[in-house]
Length: 94
Image (cartoon, rainbow, N blue to C red; front, side, top):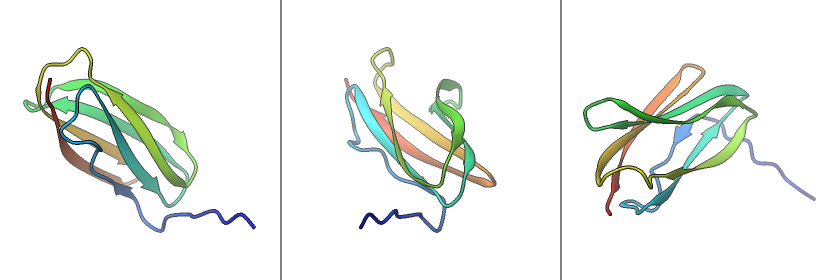
């Protein structure tokens, strides 16, 4: 018997590993189908990259962030899904 887990709330997890070089994974969960946008910003608030912008079914997901072309430092990643918004910090060490 296969049981599918559907989260009961939106969540943005801390990236892993953190600090990272040059790749990290960002996990998030959706309680219902939503348009999901995940963007990465530098510490000054300028957008560095859009990691994801698509419609997703309810569930738990993971997106990989490759920072090969970025310099060491602290970055912010932000999720927007339905009326949910959350941010987390991550550190790139090269």
